[in-house]
Length: 321
Length: 261
Image (cartoon, rainbow over all chains, first blue to last red; front, top):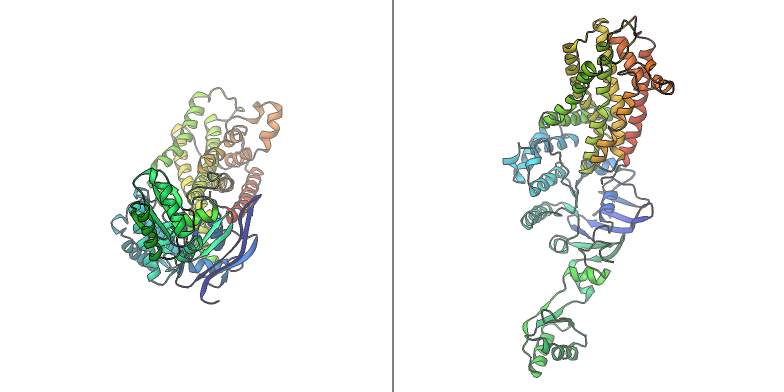
């Protein structure tokens, strides 16, 4: 128990008829990263808002750092860092003034707030821009400032709500590095994201939320195994070869393969690893087909999501129907 | 430090935040002065001769006090827009997730706006002096009048804070904070005597809190015989304190449950 820094049991939050969160359980062990994954409107942000004391759950309870998020909200606020979906900084203040203000609002004292602001500006490569108003910052710089603001008290528990939404690929990779750095420093992190590769890259454990429910949880490997483990995939040169090739695959694997007729790609789940790879190459050889780009691959989290929910992760609720 | 000390230090931190913003958005300050200045010119030189005030009263004196009060009620719009903007940008969420005093965001916003509006009031008084306004009830009277103007900022600012937390975005706040102020201030005695209005409107104009605040300010700035200080000053105090406490309470309650949008 003592080693789980976040424990949520049966969290429920309804807004009128909208069941935003409808029974979410999750656990964050100390020093690890929990990725909360789901499309827009799945209930991720509402869950985070309850854990960070911004919303009171209708039912269920949760502790952060051992403190109850409702009864001991003030203690929770003293030990956590929160960085939301928006770069929530005052754009008319400079980077330094922003950090100094948050330091003082955490009651660090004037001297320590100032020192800490300098330290964070340095660490997030904002020293050159420190005395410019945040209005003049790029999107990536604002996010870094926002994240820096949530680290003012060196929190051991950090909530990052979609930290890279809207960032360009380079800024996103930069943000990933920063996040990995925090974990190396011993922080425990709860991270929500719509991007499966982000959860794959950063999280030790993943929880997938949809329609306010946890629909799957486990490590990235476990979730991928749940969908069917390894797959074989290859291309053929011509459309006409597809029927022969797919019947050869069916014979060997016992599974009807998936066919993408546009790219002439055939794929199917396999269980025998490289041995099934060899058998399929031989079977194709016997019917005179040469397979191109043949290989074994693990399913992506995108496929996991598709298999679990029947739609792609990037689609929002409405788009999916 | 105790909880009460944190209320003061956190509120001061938020006040500092807004005071720093003022010189960085000079256009906002400029436009908050332009409007009352236009009213001064309009009522002094365009409508001035047409408005009938009781004999013995100088219309410049009469309407300048009205404009002082009216320009303080405009504090509402600035506060509601600012708060709605903070809410929309996720800053209110961030403040609510900090171990800071629950009232500090609103108190800081109000105190900085009080300082800003006192400056507006001083500029307006300066312009009033240029177009012929004179304090005729002594230094203490003038000081008391400025005190009532300050309380007016708090009263209407509290309404603005509540509106800012209730509306869905900053654009709506800008309109919602402003739209009712024109009918409210123009159906008062700020620019024309209540006696010149139709009967049904007189009944409202007499109880309009803006009229009562203007009465108190006229008593303090201009004084007897035409403008007695009491009981207007007590009525105005009651209105200002009542509005501040009532809407302040509603605003803090709304702040605690406000969600970012």
